[in-house]
Every structure is written in structure tokens, then in C-alpha cells.
Figure 1 (spheres, rainbow, N blue to C red):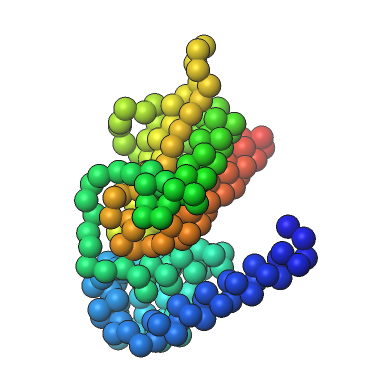
Figure 2 (cartoon, rainbow, N blue to C red):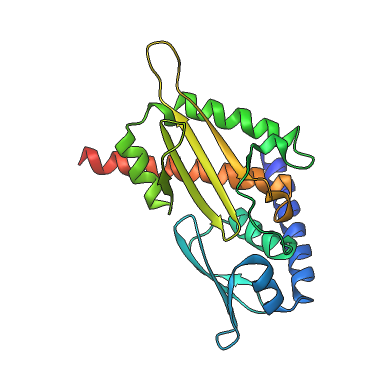
Length: 215
């Protein structure tokens, strides 16, 4: 990305953040807490949540966040707080391309995820995948895949990653899934951002894992 593209992305980010904050300032924090599942403390004037293994405090009414979250991760949280309605999890999984309006952006992410797993994650040891997943607050469970983990990105926004390891006949493969209610909580653009964040965090934690093993 060149300097001009970075500047354009920075302006777009600031505009989206400002619009989200303007909408949230008009909302009742108790209602936001009810719709999102994020705990709000009137005494502390703050929201509390855990996302990808990180504990986050969101100060009210400024909506400033503590911790080491990147700016796009923070924007996703603001959009979730703004968009969430009274919907709840259905237990039915869909891919990103099946999101409302997700054929292009969501489908593109589905292909990116498959490529990333085939090239990188699917060639990790199961021990490495388990360690990295737990660092990100993942819940490992049994399924029809060789490795399955559910990440709690937001209270009503779990993301499942399934991986099939390579064998003598087939290359490694994998896919990421959302609950079918996901469109009630984030736009397809935000969903793709969430997917990108998960892949980035997994790869970052994987490098940390490798450095520890090499010592």
C-alpha cells in the first residue's frame, strides 16, 4: 500500500469511527448492554468484554478502550455496539459468502481463508494449533474436521475455524464459519475485518510459539 492509499484508508477509518461514535452517543448504555451481551457497569461508567482472549474496558460516554487492540479491532467493537439488535445465536453455521450482501466480499474472504490454511495453518502441528488457539481464548471441540476451534470475538459473535490436515492424497484445507445470525450484529465488511483479524492474530501467535521453541 502506497502513501496515498494509506492516507485514504486513514481518512475512511476516521470517518467511520466518528459516525459510529455519533450514533452511540445518542443511545442508552443499558440498552446497548442488553442487545450486545456486553456488561455495562453504571457505577464505573464502563462496558466490559473479552475479545480473542483480551479483556477490554470501554469507557462511557467517550467509548475509549484500554488494552492493546488495533484500531480496526476497536472499530469492529463500536460497530457491534451500534448495530446489534435483539437477535440471538441460532447454532446454524454459514460461511462468509452467505452473509447478506456477502457474495463478493464474503466470498473473497472464504477463498483467502482456504488459501491461508492450505499454505500455512494446515501444516502446523496439532499442539501448535491448540496452544495458539487457547492464547486467543479459543474453545477447541470435536467435529467432522481434524481440528476445530471456536473464537469468542464478541458475546454474540463466535467464529469457528475448521482445519483438515494434509495427507498423502490431499493438501491441507480449512474454512471459517459464522453463526447464521451474524448479519444482525455486523456488516459483511466488518465480518471480513473480523476474519482478517483472527488470521493475523493466529499467525502472530504462531511466530511467538516458534520463537519459544527455538530458545
